[in-house]
Image (tube, rainbow, N blue to C red; front, side, top):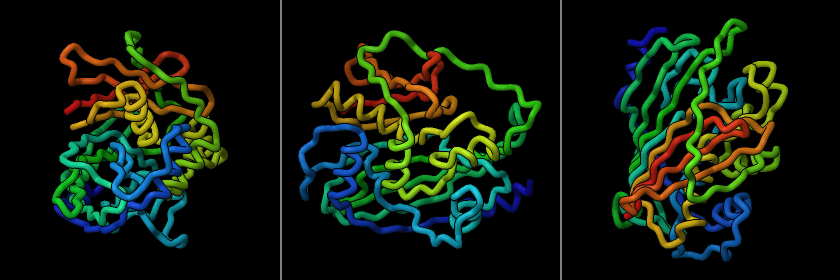
Length: 282
């Protein structure tokens, strides 16, 4: 692992432009089983739904064996086969609206190496600023982790029990259709979300993996369903363990005593914590 070479990507930047259109919003609302009215120009984009835009458009010939674009380009060419969205932190400064012309300025902030329980890990931190005509609307820090394929003698990580004191919750059935629709909406070719043969035989998982961003979106969606008048000012989330399509899972939330903080989490069918998150209300 030539970390000195990978750190040459520090400070690299990339600028993308997009238009917030209504059809992806309507499609995600349907995917989340919401009863929203048909979106119109001027409607506020819900938190995290900006992930429907600035999509990674790569030619078919540019994809690697896992369905992701081949390494290099804006992100450093980390020579480890598995890539995952490990978490993120977002601050919402002003609304994005359907019809807005928007830009996203991205920077590589950090590239670091850690020797984990099952081998080498490389962490890449990307910072995004998304702006509309009024200025910066949101800032986001995106944590990406790269790791090796599983080995026969790997010891599974000890699971953490999820809290049991939720104020509200929702059971999610992560079937193939849900995962396919979210992959399509985000133009995500990563095969771990739809190719069962690949994910079980090559990457060694027991089933299709539910997208981390989809779980985060479901957590915010749970908040919106139960606190419909709340406005989210900040949100942070961390993936704790993978969620698979082989069983249902739950998204849960609890409003804290200060009335401004909502603890959100996801747990699998065995009660193990799979994602931990915090929303701060305005």
